[in-house]
Length: 571
Image (cartoon, rainbow, N blue to C red; front, side, top):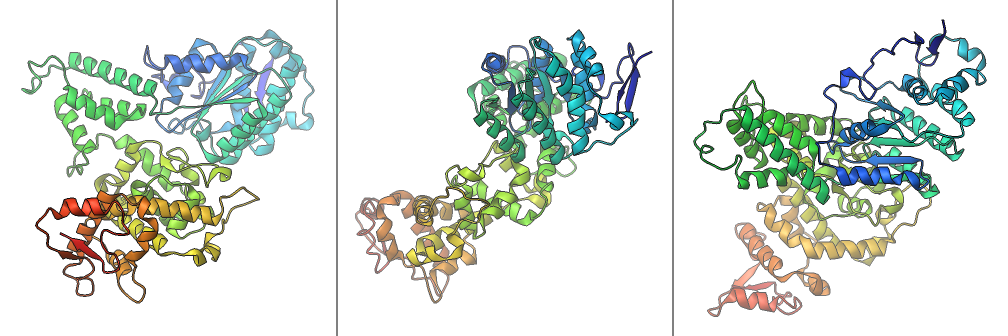
């Protein structure tokens, strides 16, 4: 009897015996029900991915935010024909990579008779082969790849059609092991072994860096799943429509608002759902599971609960959270932040209210080093689009999906992670006023010099300053109005030993939108009229000829309208 032994994972079995089901393979029963793309959806995306096979890029990295349907895509493509598949999953406790190469190798034997022969006749690894069990480590992942994948692959001149699929690489136990797995695959591909790999994961920073470098070498093709893409929006709409039809058929809906209608839910409600889901499959699946729960048997009432959450209502005391799975996912991602959680939360809160800005510019607004902003988001690349170091002065930060911000600003959902938008609008207003108060001398301070590793082509301080001045002129006024209740730090900018001089705005008159500036002045007047030191900050003169229209017209050239040396405001 021939015994196969996975010396790196301590697994042995006899030829003819099936491998134990550890939940990592394509049709593993532990993974039932399998996450498949709904029939008729993702067709263009699948066609695009499979069409790359003839381009010479033997590695494909398919990446997207959590819940964008990557595992369903991997399963569907795998069922169309793959040579091997391995699915990492935290929920199934399938995070150990020690048996990855062994599992893949045994699946490859099913497609290539010569694979088994070459694997067992390849030169052994000496005494290492005699160890019955060896715990996974960086060194052992390399050795395991050499023994189970690289050695037999070098002897084979023709491979059958199909990919080796690895799904959920970001859920592998540690970043160092993830990097080792990618390194093994890249090194093997550089040696032209002929194997083709399809890897699905979230866009974590270390994985992006490795695959983008491989893309530059021409050996990797990258596909980013964008939840805002028209196809994703269309597919989610189709999914929701089919599921609501199924729920309608399953339950006898007796609610008076539903009886007699041609369809349920109404078009208005469906549009609200689609706007909230916005292409994110996990969001759609979560609310459908909640609405269609057979134990609750109240789809109409549960749909209403979902709509209330979408509208920003707090959770009712003791009520079930309709999108609890989404909230758990977001909370877990934030709490994985390794170091400075308060700074991470400040960055996330600022992104909710701030116009899109690159990390370098945001760092100046927050008065921290750029490297601290980048590190604060290090574990959040799957929910926040974070540029590489080389692009941190050109590419803006943004949330992949609005549901992340919705979670953060709802105190009953976010709990201790709650971010108050009003607080961050006030902070941002203070920062913008500070920018408009700055002058050329401030650019000489160390704060304006980029704190980044290595020699990078970073935007010069003057350019960063000019960009921030432009952003401040465009957005400060509306942010102040939205804050509605200015906090003391903001109002203090207009009093004290060095108050803000409105006359400085003459220098930026062409950048300031007239109507939002008018609303700002009226808001500022309301906020300061009862503060002794500031009650005359904005003064008005009566006019019987339509002061609002006169002011709006005059503000088109801010250097004249308000006679800023006296800070007077008509009306």
